[in-house]
Structures are given as C-alpha cells and as structure tokens.
Image 1: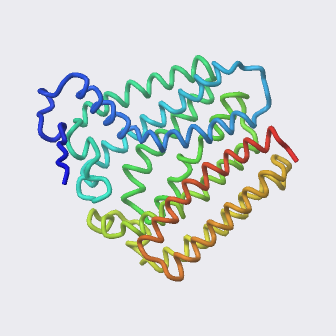
Image 2: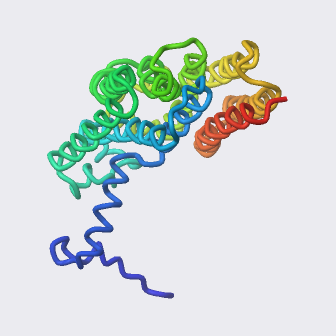
Length: 309
C-alpha cells in the first residue's frame, strides 16, 4: 500500500513553504466565498443581463458588472461562514470549513468580506448603476444577516422566506444593463425562488441528524421527513409550472420550452422517487440533480435567445 503524506497536516502553518501557505490560503478563501455557488449565481445574473434590451454597453463593462455582483455575493457567503461557524463545527458536512476549523479567524474572514464587498459595490457604482449596487447590497444583507442570523434559526420556513435573496441575480444582471426594473427578470427570480426549497430540503432530509444536533429548525426536523418529502414533490410541480411562464409570455421560444419540460420531468420523477422509496442516497441524488437542473435551465434560456425557433 502506498503511503501518502499530507504536508499541510504535519507542518505548522508558519513553517510551510511560502508557495504552499499561499496555495492553502487561496483554497480557504475560495471555500469561505462558496466559489461554486457564487459561480452559479453569476451565471444566472449573466443570463439576466443577456436577455435584457441591448443598450450598447461594452463586453468589458458587462464583465465588471458581473464581477461586482459576484464579489458582493461572495462577501455574503463569507459572512455566512462567520455567523454559522459554531454550528458548522458540529455538523459532519461543514465541520472542515476554514472558519469552523480555525484555519481562518473570524476577524480575518470578516476583513476579507469587507474588502471584496466594498470592491464589488464600487464596481457596480462605477461600471453599472446605483440601482444595481443598492439591490445587490440588499441581497447581501438579506442572505448574510436576515436569513443566516435570524430566519435560519427561527422558522422551518427559513428557506422559503430567505430564498428571495439568493434568487435575485437574474434581476441584478438585467438592472445592471438597463438601470430599470421590468417584469421579465422577475420571472427568472421566481424560478430560482421556487427551485430553492426542494433543492435545500433534499439536502436537509439527507442531513437531518446534523440539523437536529445543532437545533436548526429545518422542515424535516420540525415536521418529519415524510411531510418534507411531500413538500418537495409539491414544490417540484410548482417549479415546473413556473418554468413554463417565460415561454407563455413570449420571453423565450421552443428550445427553452423543450429543455425546461425535460429538466422538470426529471426533477419531478426524482422528487416522487424520494417520496415513495426515499433514503439519504436518493435525497442527495435529487440535491445534486437540482444544481444541474438550474444551471442547464439558464444555459438553455440563453441559447434560446440566440437560436430562437
């Protein structure tokens, strides 16, 4: 059997080579920023921007606007890590997070959040518009403070109520381009808002014991797994209905409609499977598929704009 040595584990941080320390620090920054989650949020913001009326803004300016949205979203994620560090340290899924593990101090993490948050806000003020900057800041406050600090610990409807903050990026992308509200991007917000509960409840079912241990009132903890499974099915059907609305109002064409129907048929199938014979493995399968569902749905929506049928 080959013996592998984890240099990070056996060397104190201050004796590790500079390159290794820098690499480890970068990995920790990416972890507390929830890089993959933020990347998906930026993707939805990009689609919102792409669907907005063309006002002649350059690609570079659009890129900086999306970067600003991403940085503020990452700042919210960092604050979430700090606020939740105590419960994270007690949960199997999150106990290795940098702040929970003590690799980054809370002050270090908050300083990082302040730097990237201020940078993102300035980018939006200069290269987008004030409305986008303010709305993105409100989304940060909604997720990092209202949801994480209060709703998450107060009600089993935490995901339903707090989901609006995470659903805002398509609207932010649209507003960064047009500097005004419109009905169309709110439909995209509604899609993510409806998608969020079954996405997180599937994870909560699989990690019910973790949430019980830290006394977080997730739905399967307060109302039981069977009731939560029923809610997942109900929201999956509702999501399928909401996903059709962009086609019905003429916002998208047949490519999107076909893609949305296929994706939601699979989503409903997996939700029903979870309800009938669900275990933790099936719950995690639905959770993982829900991520693919949202990403592919928005990519198809973008493709539909440029290849309409």
